[in-house]
Length: 138
Image (cartoon, rainbow, N blue to C red):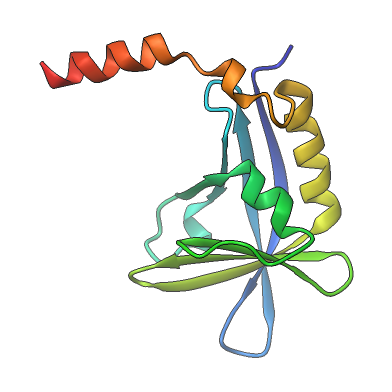
């Protein structure tokens, strides 16, 4: 069984001008970190000109497709028919992207084939994580 899944998506970046710019992005789910989803934007799509990756909970993404959720750096909410908005808040500003809800749903279904929702705790390697933490402390 695949331990990591990646899915390319087209994100529509909401700019202050009345237009939407489409940028590529990649959603990533790794069974070794079963609660998290990562979304990476390539250098041309970022202000810094370097790849930027945001990490947030899989549950946040799933819930945000049907109702507004999030109070921190990442917020998710449905937007009209067939779209979901992700807001990324950083000291430099806020980025908002629209994604097709169907693409997010497909990604989440694939991630649940790797780790079923509600069973994430069964895939944690706490002994390994504790060993690494203690090794770094020495």
